[in-house]
Image (cartoon, rainbow, N blue to C red; front, side):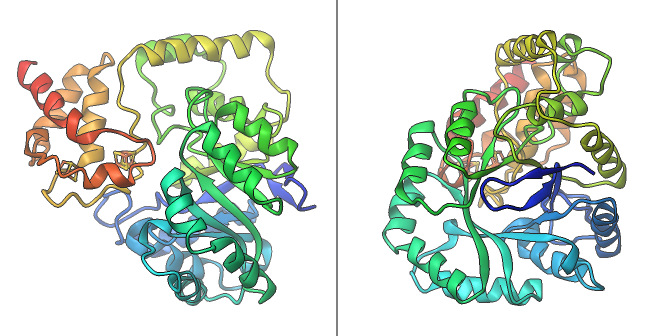
Length: 375
Ligand code: SF4
Ligand code: SF4
């Protein structure tokens, strides 16, 4: 495993870290609380044995069961081999005391006295203003640090570059941040500009969604044609990020042992500045093709679920996104299998309030149903 400097923390973290939001489940539903414990624990411990030393979880993952699973996986001496990260669920906060209450609950679920890296989860403009500033969560983070309950303070982010800068500039003691980046999202959200800005300020920068919710693992055929066959689409997507100056390490939500083994092999070969100029150009072309395919930028994070009217929102988007590729028949078959169709959307917009990708689901769903009807 290769290790990389993590901002000004003085720590060395593995190039690949393990996100625990896509663990194997009995009902085969992503993010379901029915985690196959033995298998998930085996996977986490295998990754740690191979040198992965950063494990990331969060309050809502797997129906609030991911932290419990991670707590179990880190028994038998594994806690001492890793840095543990979890996040304050801002979306849930209604009262300021909930910061302390939830942190205590997380320590219990994880069965630890201290969380190494504590993040404000999915900060955007409104959560920053209406929760973090309103309830002075920065002081609460500092107090938790003084009490030895957390060690390093950071935030994960989904909004535009200006908001990102505002948050970074507000507090000069951020240790790290976590941003969405991949070869499609270079100008989206914090983007490459945000990466540079944070890194220059000495923050460690963790990259999430390196595969855009899995879409870059099996990209549309037209995009695959642009990528050289020298490497798999996954390896290309990860190498794009490892190459970039300012990237500390990548967070990957791994769900199978094969994925873990492949990603560890890729991490072993990774380095800053590893790409040739023509390879960088290849990514620009791939992005151009991708951007012109009218895909919905859903990463299947499931924060919008459950929909009160029974729609499986990420699945409908998955089926729809397949129509923009040459997998049209598969897309149609997938949509046909979905019991509650897109036209059942009642436009309540509940899902839109929590979507980190800012997807206007209430507007898109009727169009999707119409497109499939016409097809
Ligand atoms: S807007 Fe539509 S899809 Fe979203 S929660 Fe409401 S009914 Fe469900
Ligand atoms: S619609 Fe938004 S919140 Fe729902 S799964 Fe997709 S990206 Fe996540």
